[in-house]
Each structure stands twice: as C-alpha cells, then as structure tokens.
Image (cartoon, rainbow, N blue to C red):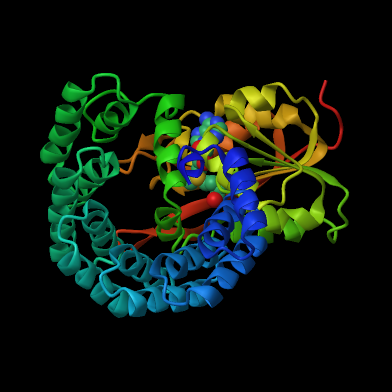
Length: 430
Ligand SMILES: C[S@@+](CC[C@H](N)C(=O)[O-])C[C@H]1O[C@@H](n2cnc3c(N)ncnc32)[C@H](O)[C@@H]1O
C-alpha cells in the first residue's frame, strides 16, 4: 500500500500478488490490486477483483466506493450510483461516497437529487473544501437565477478558505464574479493571486481575460498545462465539465457526411485529444489514430481510456509543423478555443494534411460581421465568421463549410460554437 500511495505501481502490483500467493483471496490485497488494475487501464480485472473482495467482506464501505469509482470512470453511472449507495449503507458517514453519489446524480442530470446530495455532504462534512467547490460548480452550471451564481461565489470563497491549495476554487470565484458583472472584483481576485504567486500562469491569463492586460496571441503553454493537468487529476470534474458537451459527436457527424463509409484505412490525428473522448468515434475510420495534447495529465487519461495507436505530449502547432503531409483527417474538438490567432496553427494543419485531406474543428462564436478575435472572461477565445474564413483561405484551404451549433453549456446557458469543415485541395499546391 505504501508503494501504491507513492505511485510506484510496479512494486505495489508485485507485492499485492505476493500477498495473494501467500494467502489466496486476502480481501484487502484483492481490493487494492483491483484499484491498481483500473489505474493501469485493466478496469474489467479491477471490477472482478473488488467484487471478489466484497464477497468476503461485504460491508466494506471503501471497497464499494472504489468499485463505484471504476464504474463511474468507465461511464457506467447507474452501476456507480448503486455502489455509492451500498457504501453509504455500510458507512453512513462516508463523505467521499456521499460526494461521489452527488457527482453521479449530477452527471445523470438528476438535478434535484444531486442538489440534495451535495447539501447532505456539506452538512456531514462542513470542512470538506471539495464539497463546497463542487456545490459552487453545480450552482453555476445549472443557475436558474442570479442568486444561484451569487451563492456559487460564497461556495468558492469557502472552498478556498478551507483549502488554499484549491486554486480551481479561486479561478472559479473569478469566473462567477465576472458572470455577475462584478468585473473589478474578479480582476482583483486574480491580481491578489498573482501578487502571491507572480509566476502563476492562470491569474496572468485570466487578468487578460478580464480586460486587465493585453490578450496573448494564444493561451500560453504553462496556462494550458496548468488548467488541464488540474482537470485531468479530477475525473469527477471532467464529467461535470462534459455535461451537455457534444463537440466530439457533432464533429464526427460532420466528418461522416464527407468521408466514405469507415474502412479503417485513414491516418487520423486528434489534435488536442484531451482525455480521448473522440477516440471511439474516429477509430472505425483509422488505420492509424494519433492523439496529441500539451497536457500530460490529459494524455494519461486518454491512455487509460484506450483507442489510440500513438499518444504524444506536445504543443499542437509545433507537432503539426513536424509532420508534413502525414494525415488524411485532422480533428480538433474544443481546442482551438485556446488559440486567439489561428494563422500559424491552420497553416500548419494545412501542411500536415495530404492533398484532399479534411480538417474539422470547433470554435466559440464572436458576434458581428467584422474580422475579430476576443479573449472571453472564461479564458477562451471567440472568433467571428469573417476572421475564420479569412485565415482558412490564407492557410490554403479551399472547400470551407461553417455552421453554428450548441456544443456546451456555461452558467446554465448554451454556448454557441462554430463547426468548421475545410479541405486541402486534392492537387498539390506549388
Ligand atoms: C477542452 S479540451 C478538449 C479535449 C478533447 N478534444 C475533447 O473534445 O474532449 C482542450 C484540450 O486542448 C489542449 N490544448 C490547448 N492548447 C493546446 C496546444 N497549444 N497544444 C496542444 N494541446 C492544446 C488542452 O490541453 C486540452 O486537453
């Protein structure tokens, strides 16, 4: 267990197996080996081991809770819910199980039950910072009124006071204040944060997002890593974030409209692959499916999810520049929203495609007929149609189609996105 906690999975696995050789079916060894198997991408084996442990010690709340976590991370939310409820039957004060139950209820969009479950969690464990943070996110994600966003401000303040390492609470506090038009207070949160940590990339970026400094041409590498390594560490949050998120499905449908029936014969790049949500949708087309992302934490999740032939941790534009004419299809879901200026990345995409190859990507829309990019207070960029069309043409793309769709929700409201399809001309350009 010590090796396991120190992330030395090889040693931990060897030792758990030795325990099981010495004493077959020792329940703790089976339970923790099960958790470890899941961490290494062998989730089915993990489920079998923990279920076997629970046959011997059926009233073990941690084992039920960990079994629930495997189901949740594999997307089996109803099974996960059942396990968390069992954990709470065995240990009514198990606040991690209560927290997880609230998360899966939210993920199933059973909002009243989720709200009640978060409320119970805060009663049970008023000093549990993550509980306040998740309640704040819940209130903001499903805000029915301004009061809910105001309450989220209080939750984020409490979460940060209870755990000053919870920087996501601080970032979320700024976003909620901005949503309430308390822009100066939002900027002040980031300025105070930057005063304490002058090199921290998040407040630096977010001050610009609040209009307090010039926007960088794209979110810098440290910002992207720090935001997404943080998300990846908490799969719960990833689930929440994905609520109503449909960019991968929408982009896959657009591709299906122009590609021949899937025949597993294309070289495909998932550009900004994150935790790998696009992989199952692309797999049927791909002879070789590569995922690239700047965040090692996200790539690790994608590795566990599986489906890629290769995964790389790299900056997207440089990666594309290093792979001329290597792909038949490039897909980029909700990633170019971290790029303001698109010229370099779209030129590099054009060069990385083979003649006749397709690029499909999503962006957030900026209103207006002018040629403009805004850095929005969420920290993401928004582009006007005219800007995107000009830059695609300059990059050399011929056949361009652009539609509008709702790809996610924010503050309970749908966020409009561009869905863009572009093709590299089938004649090689001189
Ligand atoms: C919102 S996530 C989307 C992930 C995935 N495409 C999906 O649809 O679930 C955006 C991803 O873009 C990655 N990203 C942002 N800027 C990048 C860059 N310059 N190079 C590589 N990856 C980048 C982030 O690390 C993050 O994983």
